[in-house]
Image (cartoon, rainbow, N blue to C red; front, side, top):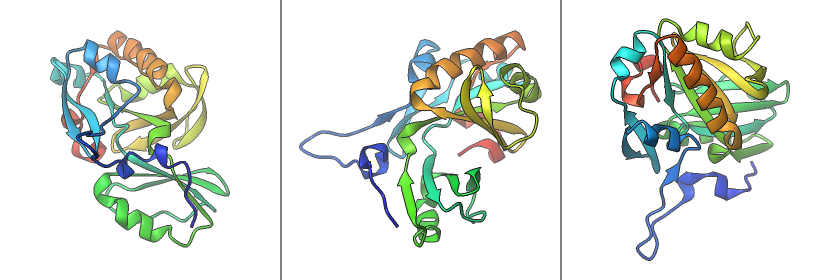
Amino acid sequence: MSGVLDFLSPSLATDESGFHPVAHSAVTPLFRDADATFEERDGWQVAVYVRGEADALRAVGVGDVSHLGKLEVRPAPNALTGEGVVTYRISPRRALVLFSERERSTVRDQVSRSDFVLDVTAAYTVLAVSGREARSLIARLTHLHHFPSGGEVAHVTAHVLPAGDGFRVVVAQELGLYIAEVALDCARALGGGLVGVDALPGAERP
């Protein structure tokens, strides 16, 4: 197993000389503008509550679950086990594995014999789309119809994965704020808005 680019793995950051490292998602500014409540979780500042989120979720909510762990694994493994662990095949030989921090050791044990494993946790933004209008919002973002799938989402390359009754949109972190702003515009048009992670249904929450 190989792993490089350690700066993409916030889990490797440690306190030193009074410095306490905390990772921030690319879409943190959007949630700050909404006066969201943040908590530190798994080394990240996570938006856990947004005023009005209960009303938003009656239509569609957009949350930020970028603090999920993410590994790129080659060759693509079979579906890994673990609570909430998602194995998404980007290509026949390459997979992206998403997991909560509590499952990190379980996931790493399962991929320990893979030829190539790269922690890309900080390389991707992951948005949660939840609520009865979730599919309508996704349809406004992309012409993709079958999920999980990758392709053009709001005119950039991204991946859309099912998550419970909702979806997750996975995109390169440098495009994360853009995708989030477009998704939020669509959500508002459908009567929704931003939501904190704690408001997401259990099957959709990290």
